[in-house]
Every structure is written in C-alpha cells, then in structure tokens.
Image 1: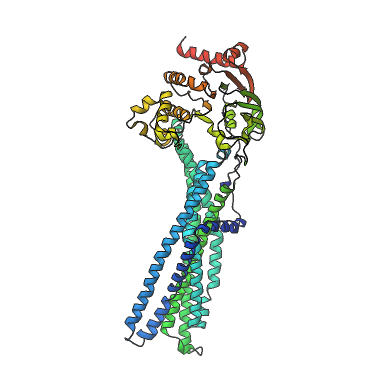
Image 2: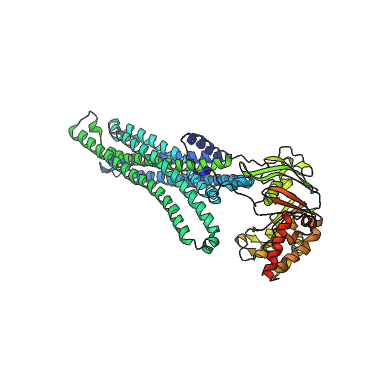
Length: 608
C-alpha cells in the first residue's frame, strides 16, 4: 500500500502572482494566435473600419443640424439621410463579420489550449496527482481556459479598436474646434486617476477569485466522490459547515471585486457629466460674450457633435478599463495554466531506448530504495529475481511496500537508489510505451469508464477484436453475467461502473487484462472483494494463463497463493523472507505467523 506524504507543499495553483509575470505571459498567450494570423488580420481590419465608421456619427449630426435643420433646407435631406443609413448598414455588416471571426478564433485557440493541457496531464507522472487535487486540475481546464477565451474574443482586438476610436475622436474634436476640444479633454487626468485606482484593486480581486474558485472546485470534487463515506459516518453537518466556509470565501472575493466595479462605472459617468457640463458652459459663455475671435463660427451643430463625441470618448475609455480586467483575469489564469504546462515530466522515455517491444518476462530488483516523501523510506534495499513464467506472490502487512514494488516496476515512479531490470535492461532505459504494454494490472479498486462493456475491455485498442473480447470474458467467467444484461457486451456502463456489483466490475477488469495478452500480469488484491465461489471460478480459469506469463500477485488471503512458485514476504519496506508456501511455513517466521493468524480467524468465523 502506498504511503502518502504527511505534508504536501502548497499547490502551485495557490501561489500569488507577481507583476513580473504579466508581460511574459501576455507574449506567450499571443503565440497561440499565430496559426490563425490571417483571420486575426481580417478581424483587425474589420475592427478598425468599424470603429472609424462609429466615429462619423457626430459629424453626420453636425451636418444635419447646421446644413439642413437650422436653415430649414429641404433639398438634399433625403440624400443625406440615405447616406447616413448606408454608412451604418455597412457598420452593421462589419460588426457581424467581426463578431463571427473573433469568436471563431477564440474557440479555435481554446481547442488548442485544452488539448495541450490534457495531453500534458496524460503524460504527467503519477507523483504529480499525489500532490495536486483533481478539482484544481479541472479548474485549469475549465474556468481558467474560459478566462482566456474572453481575452481572445473580447480583449486584444477590441483594445486596438478602442484605441483607434479614441484617436479618431480626438482628431475630429480638434478638426471641429480646438478650444472646445481642450475643454472636452480637460477631464482626462481625472479619468486616468480613476482608472489607475480601479486597475490596481481589481487585479488583486481577480487573483483572489481565481484561487477561491480552485479551492471550491477541489472541495466539491473530493466530497461528491466521498458522499458515501460522509453519509456513513454522519458527517453531513460538518461537511456542510466546511463547504459554507469555502463557499463564503468565494462569495467575499467576488463581492470585493464587484465593489470596485460599482464605484468605478458611476465615477466615470460622473466625470463624463462634469465634462459635458463644462463643455456647455464654455460654449454658452463663448457665444454669448464672444469670448474668442472664432466664437461666431461656433454652431449648434458643433455643440451637438461635441456632446456626442464626449459620450463616445468615455465609452472606449471605460471599455479599456473593463478590457484591462479581462486581461488581468487572463493573466491570472494563464499563469496557473503555464505553471502546469511548464512542469517538467520527470518520467519519460529515453531519447534512445535500449529496449522496446515484447518482453520475455524476467524481472530483477537490485538493492532498490524508494520513498514517496524525502527520507521516509517505503522500500529499503530490496533485491529479488523473478524468472520468465514464474508466479510470485507479494505478502505483508498494509504499508509494507507491496504495491510500491509494482508501481516502480511499471515506472509510475523512479527508484531513489538501486536498479529495476526487465529482461536484464534497466526500466529507465526501456521505451516507456513498450515497457507498459508488457503489463496488465487488475486492482482491488476497479476503475471503469463511461461507455459499453466492450469499450471498457478494449480500452481504445482497436487491434483487440470482438472475438478476442468475448474469449477473454469467457476465460474469466465474465461472459455469463455479461450476456444476461439487456444489451450484452453493448450494455452502457455508468460513471465508475455504477449499477454493477463489485465482483462484476472485477470480472470485467480481469477480462480487460487478459484481452491485452500481457507478458507480465499483476493482480493487486484483485479477488479480495469477490465471493468464494466466484474466486474459485477465476482461479480455475486463470491457472493455465498464469503459466504462460510472469505473474505477480498481491494478496491478503494467503490461501489464494499456495500454488505460487515463490512468495516474497515484506515487513516495514524490507524483504524479510523468500520461498514457497511450504518452505515459509517450515521456517515459522513472519509468513507462518500471518498464516496462523488468518487460519485462526477463519476457524473462528466458521465456528470450528
């Protein structure tokens, strides 16, 4: 049984994010747009044209007021209205085209990113999952990727568009009247102060929201899977209180972020109102008192245009602040995603493997030491040999290192000291895919995927045909119960095999292992949850199969391993005894004590 570390370091998901990461992560995010640079270029052109057309609206207003409405000029008004309509019809068409392209690019980038993350998770060593809760890992693939989607669909391109419309508006303002333009822009410092305050505080808020989201997902994942245990020990109220605390922390983080929005947006509107009031005041004072030489050229149409431009100017400035928050949320999310993607994969296939393909099945441990946690040795100087075709049992108390032996053999972890050889080649020098293809494992806790029984036996290996699936099921005596189901081998299995008994799930697991025809078969307490009758059927069906393979059997019930060629007895991570069943009983050591203890328990339970 694997011993988990007592103290696990703080997961990388919870680290605070420094500003030094911002630029680096932003540049890296932009790289995901490279495969779609043509679409990005088209979107950028559409956005620039769209925002330029939007900046023309006040000019149309000025012309309409000064050239047609004030002088009561009827001629040309229809033509002017038609031109106005056509311009905004073009704007509508461009906006449709832009939205379509933007969201298409965003979804493609998200597809690429999720695929990259999932591929990394599939190749990550098992030790990574010992230290990182599944809920937080799922957050990387869901919430954090969604934050990046918002950046690509409503961030980068829109920011450029907002900058363009701001420059266009400022240009139009000075073209219309430089003095009114200065009055209109005099409030910009106030907007800058408000925006800077919002930016600094919102950034911290987004960081807190992301970390609380990860904690919430981790808690939910753990306690939904553990619902049976929670109910069994009547811990519902305790778990409810814990969830309330985690949930409330998430609520507080969101409320804090909302507070800054609630202050910033009304503040921007207020500053805008001050700007428009100043503009009207200056215009009226200039026209009435003829304050400047060109005051006589100021018209009602000019004032109307300036008021419209003031409203248009505040919108992109406010949007830029909002986009900044989108950017910050994306930076926080990308930081966590890139930390995951940048984690080195400790266990990889060597660039030039010394061995690949089918193994003969010879296994050797040479002075192997291993610890999950530094200094806490689970295996201590373990050495033994298993010849091809031998059936070997691993025996010992819980935590003695039996399962660790098989995990190291399949290279889910690497040894700290010593060597493990398969066919006289160190497992670290094997092609990793080939090494694991030589193994099949049947565990006590069977994992079945959603899908048909046939799919669960085949596990995506199309080289295993339907006939081989049925033969494997027949050999482990699973065929009878499978055919009794409504759709037989095409029966859909629910998540984790819900609806099937523990024994039925283990029979499917046996069929899966045998269908892959491995050279080395590992049974890790595989028959511990099967009734005696079913276990006897499996024993009869698998005896001849075990003779053709090297087999390693981990079992608590010593009666199931009497016929093994060799039994290895582990105690506190050390290999204490080796021999056959009869030889070990004759020694009257640890194995003899374990056997006597189990024999006494069986005799007591049967009343003999």
